[in-house]
Amino acid sequence: MTSNFLRTAVILGLLSAIGPFAIDMYLPALPTIGQDLGAGTVAVQMSLLVFFLSMGFGQIVVGPISDMVGRKAPLYFGLALFVAGSIGSALAPDIGWLIAFRFIQGFGACAGMVVPRAVVRDLHTGTEAARLMSLLMLVFSISPILAPLTGSFIIEGFGWRAVFWAVTIAALIAVVLLAFGLKETRPAGHRVGSSFGSALAGYKFLMGDRNFLGLTFIGGFGISSFFVYLASSSFVLIDHYGVSPAVYSVFFSINAVAFFAMSQMTGMLSERYGLRRVVRVAVSGYATVMVVLLATMASGMDQLAVMAALLFVGYGFLGLVIPTTSVLAMEDHGEIAGTASALMGTLHFATGAVAMAVAGVFFDGTPLPMVIGIATCAVIAFGLTQLTLGRGREVAEAPAE
Image (cartoon, rainbow, N blue to C red; front, side, top):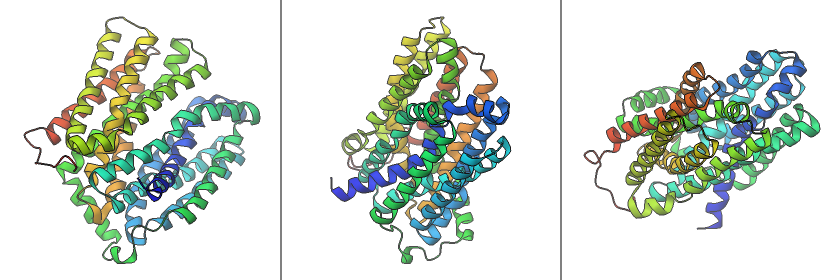
């Protein structure tokens, strides 16, 4: 593994982590923001929702632009918007301005979500792409592992506005790394023919590609199960089980460690068994563990240790699913990698938003609705895997795919 390979993974991972970092650091500040700005819970949550929406759906625009003008220019523009939104959020005088600047911040963050996947496809395919994607996710893992704890310390010491100054500094560091550490991976000759018209044609083509959609939604429902956990876990662990916010952050980080530690095995397992087989086995394992968790909780065994252990194992399996499905979905779409990455990201976020909303409707303060939501997403991912990658549909592939 060359130093250039590792450097690329680190830079892409940090670019991808900017947006999630602005979410995970921000979560512990929500009650304080409401008190400071005199806003209700719904209004404060809206500042989180608009960030999700703009970061998710902004990818539809930014992805094709990266096909037209190259990968680095949209990243510079996105980071500039993110910095502007972060500074505005830090200085916001009321909740309305905070919501507006969070929308700008989220739109800037979307470039860091969509463009790195396209860069991976520009550089590699197959097992090498899976290996780079898994390394990218290892760097990306700093957000759910460190951000909640870091955010808590910053808020306690300097107040909630300091969170936005912190992510501003992180974005400026990303600009320096982008300028000096990452080359342009889509040269001018490869951009010929790329336009908004071709992007629309690309979206139409991809929406008719059963393999692309199947793989995208396998990953999407896997991510959605984590979004359900993200939305409900603090209430379950802190209010229902009575753990402290600091202990909650530890539980949150442990699941992230399982996810990203297993993702590092993607390259090795894909080289030995093939990407499709890895997806099938990982999704089967994930769905099995989540169904066992649901059966356990539904039987009345309401124990934090049991839930934590099964979630740890389940999210380990999920760590193999996300990078492999992303690589497979984009495998045949190198010419429109930005467009394909954009549609994938938007569908992931849209699926996650729906799952979060549905789980939220039924949330009653107990773990069961959250577990039902997680298990449902896992079972749907399993069904889609059988339809998309079932043995009867699998084409012959070399183990080193």
